[in-house]
Image 1 (cartoon, rainbow over the protein chains, first blue to last red):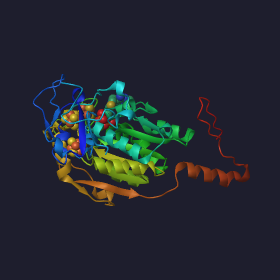
Image 2: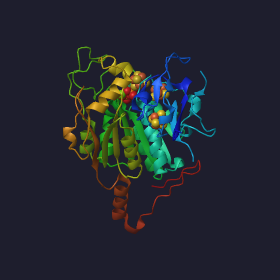
Image 3: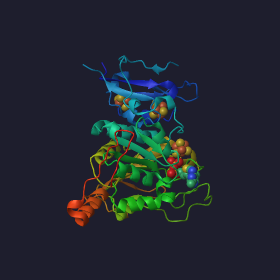
Image 4: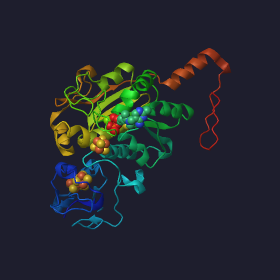
Length: 72
Length: 303
Ligand SMILES: Cc1ncc(C[n+]2csc(CCOP(=O)(O)OP(=O)(O)O)c2C)c(N)n1
Ligand code: SF4
Ligand code: SF4
Ligand code: SF4
Ligand SMILES: [Mg+2]
């Protein structure tokens, strides 16, 4: 099971792809779907690889994504 | 699409650690897709969290510009001053209430064109301020005019054939003027930037951090340098970390190497210490510490 999770606030995303590019384990990919503003938000494509490092959250200029570790 | 969509199991109490520091009722913010300003805000929030700064004792002051909006989005005491006047406002704030950690968060145009004189004199006096400059190499908010930081050959709305004026090297300027702490990062260097910001919360005196940040709308696009992501990839590729590098060798160019790191970390008495020692020297026993009572609305300050 993945160590962490990533949560996306789709409607706040502007599709810059910073999170996709800089996720160290390539958990994310831009979706082909649009949000209501016409941007492509990221999708989780490899959930098992998420460490919850929150680098995606550090990069996201729109405060639309964050990662965290599961409490164990 | 749903609000928070994910194929993973997300704990019910999960929240974005940045949100408590932002005025969420003002989101979404005005910044364009791929603009780097929001990324610098994430780093700033991590620095606040890690340094365990008392938020009641932190104030953020901005000038005008896209970067200047940070003061309006930060969920803490903040003031959005007139263009170029963030540093003089912050100076007054600091002197009236020395307990405050005063952060100046503004753009390259605001701090180094109209506000350039304030910058060098605050550095000279070693005023205890933390100055964070988001350098997108342009006057963004007003339509992409040349700034004193626009590198040679870049095209701007006021230099359609390319900028020929030499640009300021901000880190060298800050060091020469007397800053106690000088660092430069880019929005690619999120961890290092957050650490630098944390460091200046513990440092007394005039601290300066320059953050190179994409303006895809007005700088990258006009210069055919792609979008925000392209700029981030360029920062990643072109940056060299050189702590302690002589700042005179760290000038930025349009598409060359970007020297990043901490360049200056020195201790000089700050303005309030200098003022105090002067008073003690001149007045001897007649000198009394000024009363600072800024907790209540009534401010007494008998300096
Ligand atoms: C006294 C005054 N002069 C000019 C302006 C117009 N003005 C607003 S923002 C700005 C430049 C902002 O550039 P910068 O500080 O680099 O901020 P950015 O938008 O790039 O983040 C200018 C010239 C103004 N608001 N007030
Ligand atoms: S938390 Fe880390 S590993 Fe998970 S998606 Fe974000 S950047 Fe990738
Ligand atoms: S970094 Fe943020 S705004 Fe950019 S694509 Fe990812 S979630 Fe969207
Ligand atoms: S104009 Fe440039 S600096 Fe201003 S919000 Fe847009 S991308 Fe950012
Ligand atoms: Mg600017």
